[in-house]
Length: 234
Image (cartoon, rainbow, N blue to C red; front, side, top):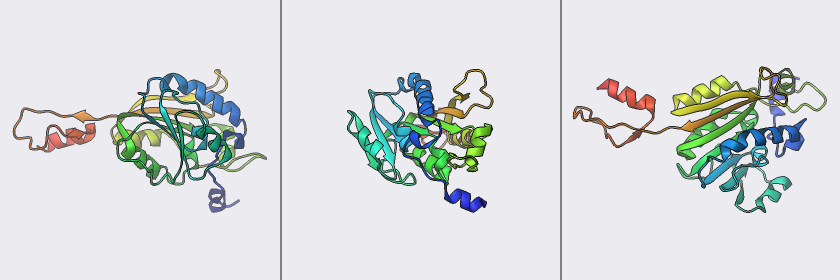
């Protein structure tokens, strides 16, 4: 199969049942993220994609599941208390700036042709100090590598995403990485585990200076890199 033909077959799954060992993976991710989800404020929790939507999140939050198409499993989820299911594209999230307190991307970036367009939208809608939870298929796992290229009877093609590039992008835009590790069904081997996990928090800093020569608004909230660049310029 040619490279372009392979990428044309990449499709966003609506359920973990569409992925080999998907139900086990869903349980694995849900159990891992549960302690971290419990720290999220009682506000808006966005789950992008059907894979994210099937992972149990903080029950005290309003859980918003967004997917380009509404499938039966997502319709069933919408019947639960504090759940909303929205049909929309990832490239134009239907939320105002800073209205989301936490966002879960359960392998969503592996099925997104341009992950940075999606990440920019998340940056826009995520509130100050909001949390971003990400799981990725580990590109160094032999089985996942085969699946990415459609090798195998039940393989589900996806885009390889390298965690260090996602981390670099986030840190350049003011996120603080809180956790990065591999996650496996077995505790014995994490190097080639099927998943890479990232947890980051959007950081906003208030720069206040008594120097009158600093002619920018000291009450304006700035990301760290921007703040220090502005100070250096003066």
